Image (cartoon, rainbow, N blue to C red; front, top):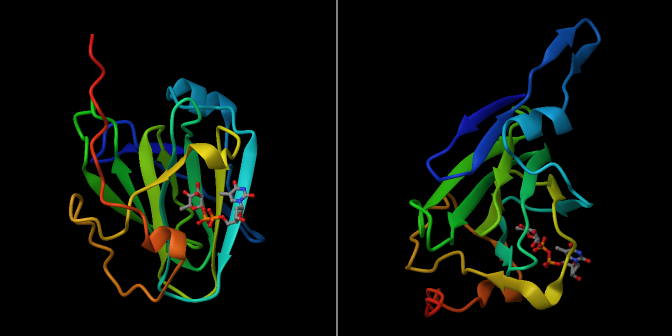
Length: 182
Ligand SMILES: Cc1cn([C@H]2C[C@H](O)[C@@H](COP(=O)(O)OP(=O)(O)O[C@H]3O[C@@H](C)C(=O)[C@@H](O)[C@H]3O)O2)c(=O)[nH]c1=O
């Protein structure tokens, strides 16, 4: 596994070591030791999967509020997606910035999404599927979202959105969290 820093603080692109032979290839998708050595989360009590019928399907941007904030490790298992993250940590050097990554069935890249980031994706092909590890159990009461076209972020999705849930189309404009008084 190779660990590549991204333009956003603490977000990491993981690329697998491919062991090719006459049968095909072998790749280690998750390694507790390598993740720990890289200073990354190693405990993932949930493993989720989502399938999307159509190219142009957008899911996101989602996060869970503290103390239920989650790390996610996202992989495209079929087709291709544009995976987008936004840093929503006010104390981070990359606060309010976004980045996008093409994750495909063929490149096997995985995106490590730290706690405090909003995450979403747009499918680039019909019948695209995504699997992701999650570090904190699903807690609907702690769920929050950022609208895909919120002018506060100006995310470039790169292609047309044709399918989105009512929930995701309706996230309110982003408001910076209140600074705690000391
Ligand atoms: C996320 C999730 C949803 N569900 C249920 C709730 C609902 O009935 C159905 C679909 O939920 P949603 O519409 O929230 O699914 P979806 O829009 O795919 O939500 C996911 O989006 C991506 C971008 C993420 O980053 C994930 O963390 C997650 O928020 O599945 C669970 O039971 N467990 C889960 O962990």
